[in-house]
Image 1 (tube, rainbow, N blue to C red):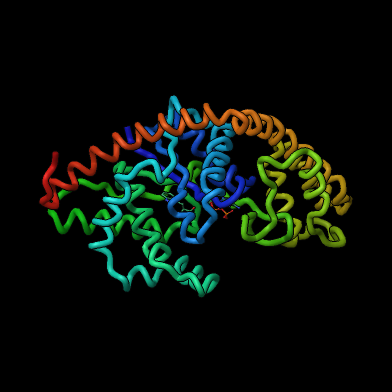
Image 2 (cartoon, helix red, strand yellow):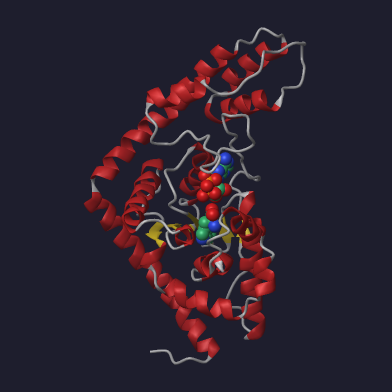
Length: 329
Ligand code: ADP
Ligand code: TRP
């Protein structure tokens, strides 16, 4: 069975963008692939989080993964820092990766601009740690957003180069994977392109009904349709895209027609959008609360995931050590 792997950094709660863009695909994939889904807590160290926040945020994302429907019986769900084998592979991959190519990664350049006082080596080698995450399980498919394209290219380079240097076929070249053919981009409510933590425009899975309604009602709009059948400006298109994602087709059509014949009232559209978001989010939020209050269960699930992930990674590392010329015990 083909192997799928993906991870999310625990830098805050999951939002609708993470859900529709990533986690919902994970949930579908766990039925069809040998899947590994993890929490990339080592990667989050590049921005120096406080120790007390690290365990807490890993547990939060784990609870959110489970609440969305990830099933520890079907997929291997684990925390990156529970699998030390990753670091050994990270070290080997770093030996074959050149500073020139790491320096050209746009996410690195961007981060270096955002945090000029903290351009650390971890940030620089972020792509090789990501490659180690993937290659340790010899994953073939990686469901991630478009923004990860360059990191994925580096992961493929790492696989190819290792195979070439040692004349082996150990690592398959991992491919980006979009569950529904193309990457889904969930827009923000502020008229900006994408919903994202750093954009500060998110509806979080843990937001309660009141908060969701308030955020939706405050979404940016304009002064309404002026001409029959006119194209929608970006801010309005965003609302329609969201409606398309959370509502049924009939509802979407109803509001689309209203737009086209210039009778649309944004208040009605927002009310419907909020209603449908609340309907999707309520059961998820309730399950998040349940899982979060059961830290014993969360820790048990994380331990189980770590055991499975370590077993898989250790098998690869045994091969890697042999290939490189190290002793294998
Ligand atoms: P954020 O942008 O909030 O920091 P991340 O960059 O950590 O989120 O992304 C985690 C995962 O969620 C990635 O696979 C990414 O592609 C996906 N994702 C994040 N925001 C969106 C969005 N607005 N639409 C679709 N997918 C998204
Ligand atoms: N870089 C990814 C992000 O920011 C998170 C991540 C780390 C990841 N390691 C990975 C994703 C391995 C897929 C595979 O979203």
